[in-house]
Image (cartoon, rainbow, N blue to C red; front, top):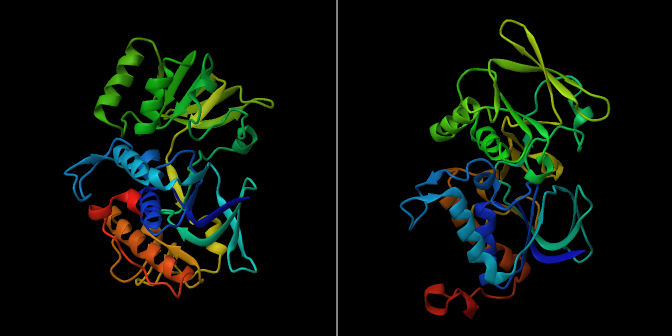
Length: 335
């Protein structure tokens, strides 16, 4: 069982900064995220997007910000559980929490801090009958976790955004055959990526199937082919080993919805003094919380993380006075 002071649910920028603020108060953090990598939305959806409203950075790429936050947190030795989703918690006799993930990982924490951005991200799936038959390693994948799985294989990628374009470009040098399918003639991704994909198609290194929608998935046990229809209702069947639909991610509150927290639509109501929820010992910071005047900005989430950590420290140490030492004087290692 993992032991920690604070279990942070969500490894996005706000959760990462909370490690630093907690570390200054001698509190250890363990982060859990349903995504397979650190960084939350920034790493999963727009790693190359420039961000302009981070103090001290006229502009910073999303992934660069994540990398810097990870480096900033390193002195406090955080630990991570990635690719797993928090399912349940229970209050123990010592008033701490026993938290369990969907993979059975158990975490004992004195504090829970929900920093899940917009919530758990679930893939947007094609509306095609029987798709669940080919999930769980049988030919359908909603994100590319290990590109080597596709080496020498036939791969169909469906989508029109940056992820679909980027993985088409990358896998063109890995897979035996790559087909990119989209329901229209135009793409939503970066113009440079679109140009590269078109060049690969012109050179015969990939296949393009435009104005087409998934009609049926075919195979016995493992996916063997995908049938597509065009605007003229003509059917094209493409033999394949894998289909990777990259239609984006849909935010869901997930199991947290049943934790007894006060909710306003899909957001968690908090006390702005310390970003505590109505459940003692559980806090919420970042885009997942709501309060009067709420702004969904990363820099506001950083502010919330700092106040949350001080509130959590007071909750755990009601008889101790917090002595704030400026890092400009002592440095991180002085705490």
